[in-house]
Length: 293
Ligand code: SF4
Ligand code: SF4
Image 1 (tube, rainbow, N blue to C red):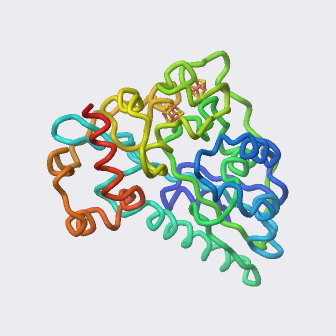
Image 2: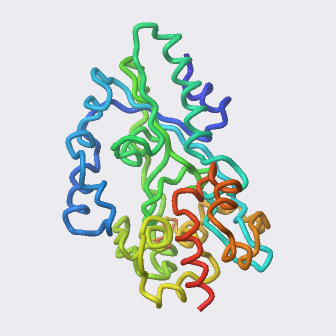
C-alpha cells in the first residue's frame, strides 16, 4: 500500500516513516527537562524509558508513521476582536478525536495489508517525541520556533503517529535540511522572550503554556504581552514566512462579556466537546481579565 497517498486521501497534508528507535532529539529533550524549562508540566519528566524506546509503547514496534493534519489558518475571534490561538478551532470537536479517527482508518488499512501486524495510534496520548520522529521521517524540518514546518503548507498542523509492528519500507528520504536560513523573525517577535534561541524554548515563559496549561496566578505583566489573544499564542508562527496563507479572523466566539458571565453548565454544553475543555472556563475567564487590564 502507498501510505502517503492513503494519508492524503484522509486529509493529512504530510506523512513520513521512520524506524522505531531512540529518537534523534531524545538527549536534547532530557537536557531541556533537566534544565527546568518545562514550567509545571511535570508529566514531561515521566516515562523517559517510554520516550526513549517506542518499542515499549507497542511491543515489537518496527515502524512509526508520522502524520500532519491541518488546522484552519483563520483565527477564532470574538465580536470585539479578541482572539484565541488557531489550533483551538472552537466550532469543531476536539482535534484529538477528529485526528484519531482519521489515523485509525489509516491504521486499519495498514493492518489489512499486513494481516499479522499490530498498530497503536497516538494523538498526544502517549509519551512519544513526535516532532523528533516527524523530522526524522523527512516530512518537514524543525523551525527555530521549535515547530515542525511542512514546506508548502507551514506549521499549522496537528501531529499524530501510528506505531506498527509491520516493517514498512522507508524509502531513501532522510531528515529534511533546515530551511530557516538566516531568518530570525520568530525569535525577534516572541513577546515574552520564551524563545531563548533557535529551538530553545523556556516553556515557563511561553504564553501557550501560561494561558492553557498553567493554573493559578500569572504575573500581571503577562497580560500586556498577550495583546488581544486570550488563549494560546500564534505569534512565532504568524511571522514565519512558511505560513504565508493569511486569512482574516473568523468571528466564531461569544463576546468577552458573555464569556465572563458564563456558568459551568453553559460552557460544558457549548464547548465541552472542543479543545477549550482542556483549559476550562475558569482559566479562560482568568485570561480574559488579564488581557483587559
Ligand atoms: S507561542 Fe508565543 S510566547 Fe510561546 S514561544 Fe511562540 S511567540 Fe513566544
Ligand atoms: S520565522 Fe524564520 S526562523 Fe522562525 S521558524 Fe520561520 S523561517 Fe525559521
